[in-house]
Length: 150
Ligand SMILES: [Zn+2]
Ligand SMILES: [Zn+2]
Image (tube, rainbow, N blue to C red; front, side, top):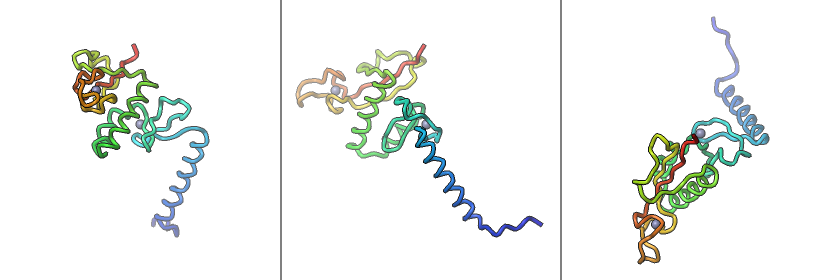
């Protein structure tokens, strides 16, 4: 006969949950945080490792996470988070903005590829409501590319 335990399963689980929570806190003190998407831990001091989107997302997960996350946001939130993401990619991963899709590097050379609203005209393609936006050639869209390090 199986050994009978007086501890209900829920209680064991709750206890483990508590232990995990404590472990996470400890890792937080050590400057390590988990990506909300893949759950892997990364150093926060490595500022390019985790993107703070309200939840922390590691660089490797951005291409998969962003399309799904952005689809859940309303236009205003999407724009502001997208802008933040583009700046972060530029600052920490040398992302380049392209306004002409014909000029993109070969896809085998792209490590990350995101299509974003132009930050200058906010996706309208026009500056001051008149002039064609020169940052996106009036498309309202820019291509954000991180090239593979050769
Ligand atoms: Zn991740
Ligand atoms: Zn523009």
